[in-house]
Length: 166
Image 1 (spheres, rainbow, N blue to C red):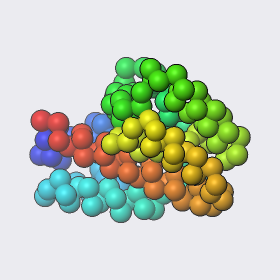
Image 2: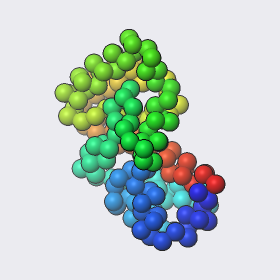
Image 3: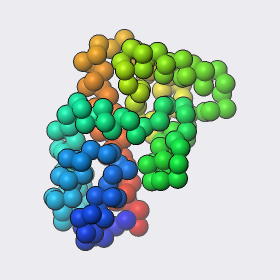
């Protein structure tokens, strides 16, 4: 969608469009009310600043929408399409990698009580597995911060993609 079109959408439509980027109401509202944007960079700057204000409970709520890494997103909605593209480089045909990710995901969830979240776009399955193994050594606080950072990166990539679709 062009920036001009995004700027002109009624608030309710803009909110629906943004929800697949991240389902955090305060972020969506901050981006919508800041329109109109003079450029995509200006929109991204507002979105980034709004993402820096996320509270831990908002991040936890948003994590509920993300599939496990290495498992395909279910459904046909925009969020599922984003996730499928982002995880495209995770080679699901590699049985050894798939099993290592499955075991790592289970261990991570037991340790941190949440799904492992990483910006998968631009990473292959092996690098994701290395990051998962590294992050298992994080403290709960380190992991809370790192998870929020990964969610911000995912959100910004998705928002930028929305604004680049003509």
